[in-house]
Length: 112
Length: 112
Image (cartoon, rainbow over all chains, first blue to last red; front, side, top):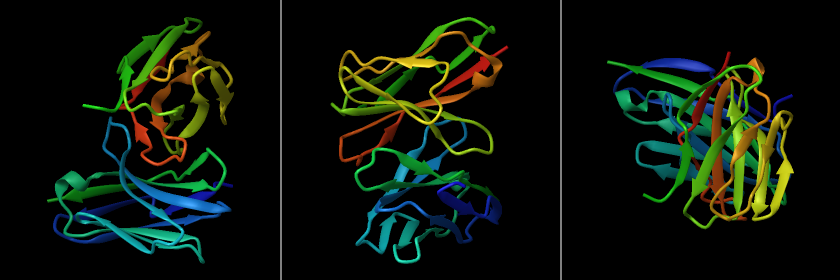
């Protein structure tokens, strides 16, 4: 079973609207959680990274939250733009371990 | 610009051919790794290295070899290409605290 589960698998939103992506994980002991944005045909680019003690972190119109007790994270996109169309990947790492656990990604399509 | 550089961007191989995917980084990162990304699946670790002269296997190492003779370079060799190795390959690097995890732009490989 995948240690990182993301939902929804895909969604379509209207330009200007907000959306929230979910990430649930079972990785333990937890070290940090990252959200990456991957445009079609490009490599993943880091949006945020959060450690155990951080609940919220923002990067422009992207806001990530973390609940380490329930092992859940979300990525909120505010006032979506066409350029937000991409796959958003949740990545979790464990303490003392150089392996990263990757989710399969949330595919977001923003339409005008 | 500093970062991870991968070459080539696209490659078509015939079954049984060998080739090397190149990866170079100029951030003095100790950790380098290779992933493959297939449709509907998360990124999967092929091989990784924590420093020059040190390499180790990841989740899906069969059919691939790596070496790390310098801090900057981490080439991935396909010994005898198979259609199952058709994929997009990403190289990534970071410091040993696994912050600043940076991906290259990818190599799209097709084996016919």
